[in-house]
Image 1: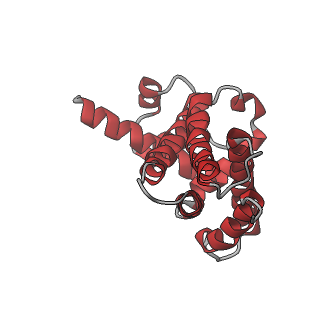
Image 2 (image 1 turned 120 degrees about the vertical axis):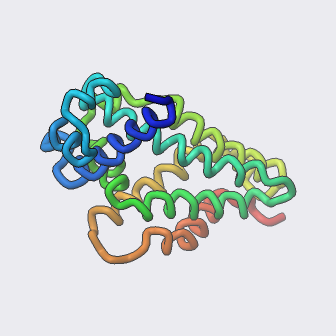
Length: 199
């Protein structure tokens, strides 16, 4: 099997796992369920992942890489003010989660119910993503747009925390509204806390 076909099957397994875990919960999902949805034999799963836990970790790592890859070009835009970049990052984050409710359920609900798995999750994926947000906040400080006393990494974690809470509220409410529709209100609130005082 070529690398491309092998990777395609791995992605199919992960996609199936996202749907099954979102619908039945992590503990209610079996490897057999995932295999059935992916259209592979149960044993095939173990050629790609050593356990159900490993599948959940891989879902997290894939999602964080997607967030990072989408955010990096925004942060790298030359000549764009930090405030605009932060608005774009907020919109991006809410859009990516909002377009895949199953993934959002896993991120906002299932990870919180599996504390021992949280310890297995890749710290680097989250750290890299927070680092991009921190770069934008550091840029805003250099521009004089953001308060000079703001710690960029601390502020980045606060930004992520607000986005995380908005996504959790959206998932739990089950309302038929677009998560991305909240981006302007969230951005305005975050920028209000970061902006330097006039004068």
